[in-house]
Length: 394
Image (cartoon, rainbow, N blue to C red; front, top):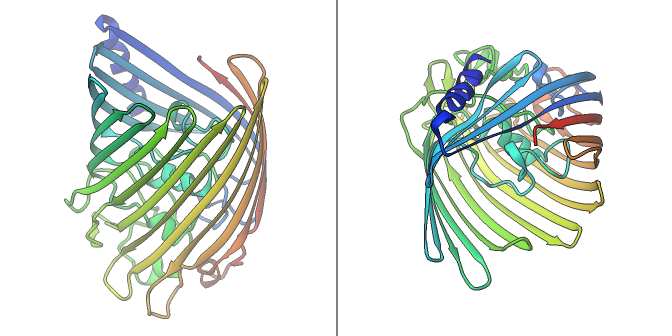
């Protein structure tokens, strides 16, 4: 909490003589009924953030614009005893005719998601995120520099960007060792996330820290990763986007954590027609660590399609998705194989301009072979029912 609060207070204090200052956020109360294996947040193989529980969460974002072309941003979260910084960056932008240039430095989301487009990387369509974007929220948030160029033609907006980053070296650990999950949990800087009870963590990778993995921390291997993105958009109607990322991890052990070599391609599309919205996103990649052939070498895949209809103060959405990881090693040890699918039905209702109520049902079915090697049921089937109330500052 102290890091998050300090960052936000610094922005607030500095804004006294600034040009503009914007504070936004929301407080959320949520009740969950969940069936299936124990939650991954408790070191199990469950696909959801919690088992049966009540969840309280506060998210705050502050933006200070002291000059016309300069902006400072900080976003923090506090939940059930754990608080921290989600994103923090400085940004400058300027326009030249039909061209707009932007330079951003700090920790930030890459802008790949087609569903997480509301304030503070939340979704305007559902309470939980797709498996694809749940993983992004947990393990993919570079610390680096992003340069973006936007060109407005007579009919379309074309955006290209390039990112150089460090400090996101362990991305892939949760995905390979635990698998895909469904939730809305944003990992914070320097947070330790639990790993499942795998035999290999006790017998092979014995130098891996025992309390879990840290997706966002100071750089491990001294290598610079990169990402590139291109988007074609018909404003407020349609867009399609392609992203490639490679963190260039060296697969070696550093400070009791491995630098995972992770790369992926992501394609997303979005269509708006009246009160209806259609989204789709696809990702495929590869991740690995440790010496070959006994280290990890896993391919992964996830895709979803979401349809949403807004009428008056209500929004109803349906999401269908599939996901998998595939062990590519020849070694006959634990197999990092998983396959599954999920559907989600969500209803959001604006009680007042600042209060939103929601209800959501999610079902996940599939199998994870790692669980069997740990002496547990490999079936990952489970259901989640959520009731939520959210109060927004704006």
